[in-house]
Length: 264
Image (tube, rainbow, N blue to C red; front, side):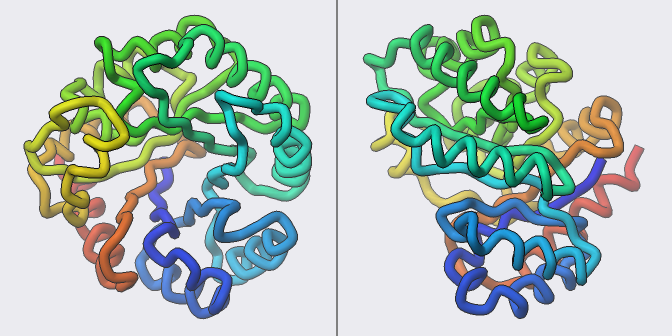
């Protein structure tokens, strides 16, 4: 298993000072990064890959946005095809992550069909499309996420274990239920607060996640599970979203990872 960090903490710095940001990330000790095409559009991705390679880092995955999955997903699928083709040719890890915020009226089966078709587009180029969750997927005892699992066989998963915990679900059971269709996770460290509802408003009302290693999550059990079930090319990515874009936050997070990996 490889450990990475999410570049969302650095946001626009990746475009305004891409080289300096990549050098700072190198100092964390993580093996690679995840970033999104809202920060690094397709025409900037060759430079990103070159700078990462020069520092001995990998692009673990790209978060692909700009698709209205529910209303009219096919308007964004030309862009998805272009990103998937580029990813299949040039990315060291052939992964694209996607996300969606379902509401209470969502047609779960319809959305499963949409994501399955999108996954088939990516599969054509040798790319894994991975669904990345937040909070609202776990309403009604996780109906949305389990509908994807049951009826979108081409789709894989990149679970955010922090949001799984905040939804009151057991992340290890979800990983067990998903099996080999999840080879990529986000690691966070929430406190014990739980969302009062599964809406976007409830999600926004929660405080920012504490820095990794300063919350109240049983991180040891998560790391132990991943060590036993993830392969050498699978990824666990620490995400600090919001707060100061201070590389020391990820340096401290990597120290926590190193300590957890030496126990047991």
